[in-house]
Image (cartoon, rainbow, N blue to C red; front, top):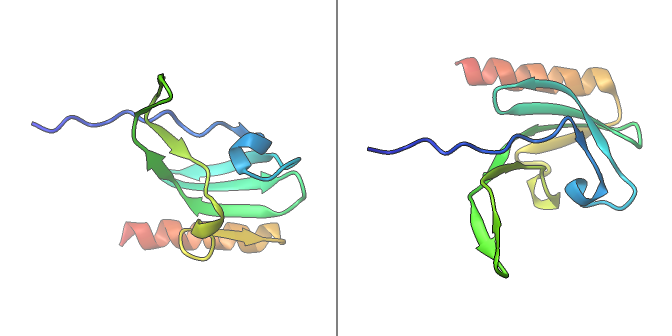
Length: 101
Protein backbone atom coordinates (compact mmCIF):
# COMPACT_ATOMS: atom_id res chain seq x y z
CA UNK A 1 0.00 0.00 0.00
CA UNK A 2 1.39 3.38 -1.07
CA UNK A 3 1.38 6.12 1.55
CA UNK A 4 0.93 9.76 0.60
CA UNK A 5 3.92 12.00 1.26
CA UNK A 6 3.17 15.13 3.25
CA UNK A 7 5.05 18.07 1.79
CA UNK A 8 5.97 21.19 3.72
CA UNK A 9 3.97 23.98 2.01
CA UNK A 10 5.51 27.00 0.35
CA UNK A 11 5.37 29.95 2.74
CA UNK A 12 3.13 32.96 2.22
CA UNK A 13 6.27 35.07 1.90
CA UNK A 14 9.41 33.85 0.18
CA UNK A 15 12.67 35.67 0.82
CA UNK A 16 15.78 35.96 -1.41
CA UNK A 17 17.17 32.56 -0.43
CA UNK A 18 13.88 30.93 -1.53
CA UNK A 19 13.51 32.87 -4.78
CA UNK A 20 17.13 32.36 -5.74
CA UNK A 21 17.50 36.06 -6.62
CA UNK A 22 19.40 38.41 -4.27
CA UNK A 23 17.25 41.17 -2.74
CA UNK A 24 14.02 39.72 -4.19
CA UNK A 25 11.15 38.51 -2.05
CA UNK A 26 7.69 37.35 -3.08
CA UNK A 27 4.29 37.32 -1.38
CA UNK A 28 1.52 34.80 -2.06
CA UNK A 29 -1.61 36.42 -3.50
CA UNK A 30 -3.61 33.34 -4.56
CA UNK A 31 -3.38 29.59 -4.35
CA UNK A 32 -5.57 26.88 -5.84
CA UNK A 33 -4.45 23.28 -5.27
CA UNK A 34 -0.99 23.14 -6.87
CA UNK A 35 -1.15 26.57 -8.56
CA UNK A 36 0.26 29.77 -7.05
CA UNK A 37 0.27 33.45 -7.86
CA UNK A 38 2.98 35.48 -6.08
CA UNK A 39 3.71 39.19 -6.21
CA UNK A 40 7.43 39.92 -6.23
CA UNK A 41 9.03 42.84 -4.40
CA UNK A 42 10.02 44.31 -7.79
CA UNK A 43 6.28 44.58 -8.67
CA UNK A 44 6.26 41.65 -11.10
CA UNK A 45 3.97 38.66 -10.71
CA UNK A 46 4.75 34.95 -10.96
CA UNK A 47 2.25 32.21 -11.73
CA UNK A 48 3.47 28.65 -11.39
CA UNK A 49 2.63 25.01 -10.92
CA UNK A 50 4.11 23.93 -7.60
CA UNK A 51 6.92 21.40 -7.77
CA UNK A 52 7.94 19.16 -4.90
CA UNK A 53 11.21 17.88 -3.54
CA UNK A 54 11.43 14.57 -1.71
CA UNK A 55 12.93 14.30 1.77
CA UNK A 56 16.69 13.95 1.64
CA UNK A 57 19.79 13.82 3.76
CA UNK A 58 22.77 15.95 2.75
CA UNK A 59 26.02 16.54 4.59
CA UNK A 60 24.64 14.79 7.67
CA UNK A 61 21.51 16.94 7.84
CA UNK A 62 17.94 15.77 7.14
CA UNK A 63 15.68 17.91 4.97
CA UNK A 64 11.90 17.30 4.87
CA UNK A 65 9.81 16.70 1.77
CA UNK A 66 8.70 20.13 0.64
CA UNK A 67 7.21 22.29 -2.07
CA UNK A 68 9.77 24.41 -3.88
CA UNK A 69 9.70 27.81 -5.55
CA UNK A 70 10.36 27.62 -9.31
CA UNK A 71 13.89 27.97 -10.63
CA UNK A 72 15.04 29.65 -13.86
CA UNK A 73 14.56 26.49 -15.94
CA UNK A 74 10.86 26.29 -14.98
CA UNK A 75 9.93 29.62 -16.59
CA UNK A 76 8.08 29.19 -19.85
CA UNK A 77 7.25 25.58 -19.00
CA UNK A 78 5.58 25.47 -15.56
CA UNK A 79 6.14 29.06 -14.39
CA UNK A 80 5.41 32.44 -15.95
CA UNK A 81 6.33 36.01 -15.03
CA UNK A 82 4.14 39.03 -15.78
CA UNK A 83 4.56 42.77 -15.37
CA UNK A 84 0.78 43.23 -15.27
CA UNK A 85 -1.28 41.82 -12.40
CA UNK A 86 -4.39 41.35 -14.57
CA UNK A 87 -2.43 39.28 -17.10
CA UNK A 88 -1.02 37.15 -14.28
CA UNK A 89 -4.52 36.61 -12.87
CA UNK A 90 -5.77 35.59 -16.34
CA UNK A 91 -3.00 32.97 -16.62
CA UNK A 92 -3.77 31.73 -13.11
CA UNK A 93 -7.46 31.33 -14.02
CA UNK A 94 -6.64 29.62 -17.35
CA UNK A 95 -4.51 27.06 -15.48
CA UNK A 96 -7.36 26.44 -13.00
CA UNK A 97 -9.82 25.98 -15.89
CA UNK A 98 -7.40 23.66 -17.69
CA UNK A 99 -6.98 21.50 -14.55
CA UNK A 100 -10.75 21.09 -14.25
CA UNK A 101 -11.00 19.41 -17.67
